[in-house]
Length: 569
Picture 1: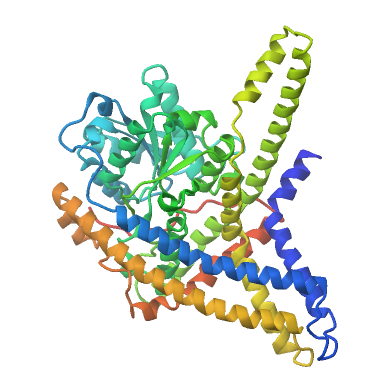
Picture 2: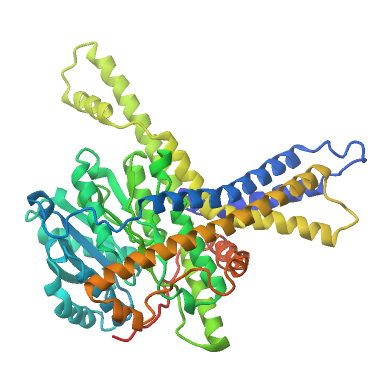
């Protein structure tokens, strides 16, 4: 198959699936229903549609259940302990280095200063952290801003540098992935042969993220304790939007809490034995693993950034990537327009929609995963073939070093982790297919009933929708239960962060700048949270639909930095 056709075909899989569901609906609803006596006898298309509707509703109900289980797991393990002594480090622990890469494309300097202040307040900042500002040359004054920040903060860390991703690199998209990869390459060039690569952990965080010292302590502790698996482990924290939640419109608030739930729903690993936890915004991985997969991809298809890098590592290890939940929440800001009044509300909604479109543009990762999976299957077929050839030749006592090497490679090649593969593709379906498919099915059924009352829905489909309406109510109540449990988690995170900032002497400064939102249930409590379907449609289904349709024509999206609150220093 032509490579360009293969790339295009896998790219438009979400759009093609949407067309497939639409055709299934047309065929199912246009099938004659017959007499009342035989109306329960359905066509094959109707049976398939009914089964698919049940599947969509089952997965919709499963998501809040997983999210609540994830929160329960996190709350059991969410303590104020850092995982390492804050007073003294052993010689082994002192050898750890964190390369903290902060991509900063068109970010306000005030946002970066606040982030660096929080990092500098950590007890092991001077022992462990090498902070690297990943700037973009396309941004006017980026080098000047970075130089100023390095001069202000370099004495607080073990090391601090910056790099500017060149504007003229072919086929590279301006954004997080390109900046991170350029910074990573510059670090590797500068310190190649100088440091022990096995002791370096790369941490990727957004410019507005406030990470706890507990995060780095727990990652270091696990890295030192897991000698056999540490080179294939990714570390992922839960997110909490606890900084300016009280200053954003209700749909933005509920959408971001659900976005946090998307990551939290994967964090039942400790209790279920699963090993799939896709990162959002913040994660760490060993330098060895990052180099093994060739760093971060930088083209248009990698706009998913965090998920994309997870998938790249996941398939490189045949599904054997270990994901370790770090029980120290990453504090995030909501998208904010920094404006007041009705105009400010609409600008805030517009900014959040732009962010949601960028998130949903990451449905390109579905095609990437399909291509990686196909390549993995091809490699395994070749390995099995080489193994058989090697065995056949060995019967004739072949001394060929080529066949001996191939035999060794096939023996050392890990088996595919089928359960993890299934879970990854199920998560991709939830993220990139479920929102649009469910809305399409429900809207089509309603429109058919409204515009063509003389042609009632086939009995099987009508019965399926009636049963699933109960499932939707159950899902609604489960999501409200998730919001209630999330609020408990939110309050606990704020409590721990305030305690840490008080010790660091930054509490008063953060309080002055609305750096804490005490509760997530604002504006009517659970009654306000009950409006979450509005945010789900505005910032879930609509941008997802726009993204998959646009992918038929292009894979390029201009990277726009999300608006964040501005705090005076």
